[in-house]
Image 1 (tube, rainbow, N blue to C red):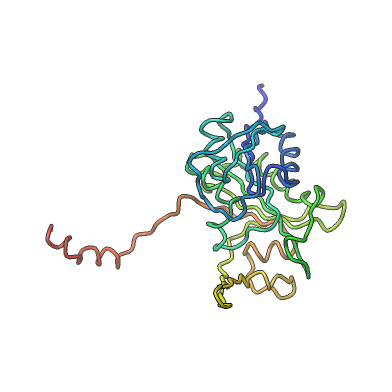
Image 2: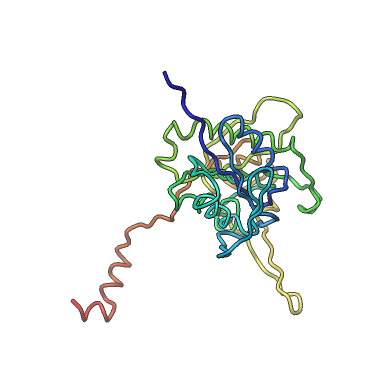
Length: 271
């Protein structure tokens, strides 16, 4: 009886190829598949699906460093640089990607969406980083902090393809908590939906307008307002959140819009 071949995996991120999150995933996924890294040469956080058109590429001990965005990396990796993979993995991002409103902003998630247009299933993995009284930029993370994220991603890479998960989902948005202890039982996994909370506002200060994202101000497990079953609640309460998502965006039939189109002057003239 022939043994199943190891999957080909294209690994990218948006924090940059030199960050600990991608190195931890590379090491973990190399135990279960053949991993080729095509990742940004530097930090490309929150660039969404921006494309550069032309990018510089240099060899790296993990694969290739691209002077461009995560979407650039996926296109370059799938169309030219790497073996065509069974799966694209993006991450692990330092900081969670939670809620509907971040899906188009995140470079990590955008890499997974780009893969979906190539009909390649993908997993976007991020780690929730509680900041307390610190600014997010001042929170340092090490390799051990990504243990839950690596464990969950490896499990999904090993089993999701064979289980038929990607017959329904184009990609999985995975968010893992920071491990509570140096060693211990894995955090439980919960299938979730993206939270619909949106609390952006803006304040003018002279010649500037300062934008505030207030969603992140309510992230205490005892008082988080997001309902059960959402990604934010799962992660804050210490579970690995897995949201199955689709791309491209789906559409529904709208009778009201049909009626408007039928009454449009040009439409009535051609009837």
